[in-house]
Image (cartoon, rainbow, N blue to C red; front, side):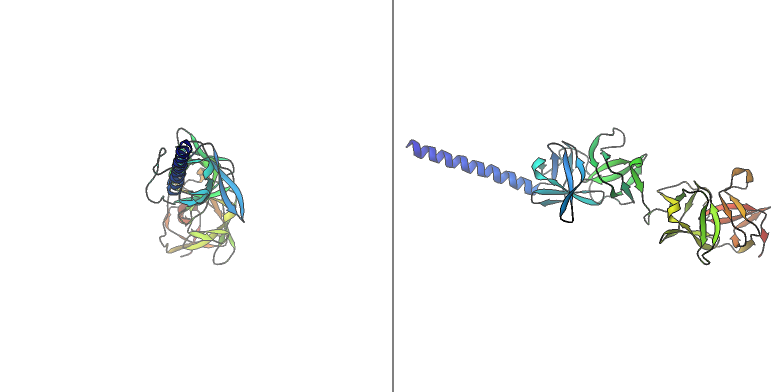
Length: 304
């Protein structure tokens, strides 16, 4: 009798354990959110091999995108990475963190430096994760000195100093980062100007290894290697794309300025031998469109 009772009890224990295991695996397979029991690696599969690309911090909550057997998959900045289930607690609802609904805006692209912390907000600098290799991410916006990105369906923040902004179609501005950057005529292929380092302009589009710009009524190129993308800029004297009817002939190299003041310092030099359309004349000053900005030059010979 005792043996029968013990057997019955043992069967019940086995059944209870099976139910617990089943419930555990069911919860694991239907989980939508995770939290690491300890810091956990983020992995990507490259050429059939696992490569560590980041790490999530113990206790931080993230949303997963897919159950991958022994892995959970999560999104970060337009990328996907895997995290092992062994070091993870799983949930059907968030237990922490601030999650967004819908799709995050993709307003730009950055390349993040290796060993970059990812913060929960732009003030406390509390890390929720890190990126351990150089990685291309999309970002939603810029908040002060931080890029705002998606990380496991949470908004997270990466310091600007830890990433390099990339040219994408949404980036309209660029800054010259090399002194005497050449400007090449699109129609002739000849150099027609040099631009000073530090000046910010508006680009039309990217063309191979060049940025295409407005030059008078024509278009020209500046080398992509000589410029840096600018997410947003308060550009003074925007010229727009108004067609200028009058022409001036440059009989000598001519400096151009952001205002009608030669003492202000030249922003560029137009090379002699070219004709360029000007917008307006004011005394001895002529205004022209240089890369989307109204600039001014002195003492040009009027042709038409």
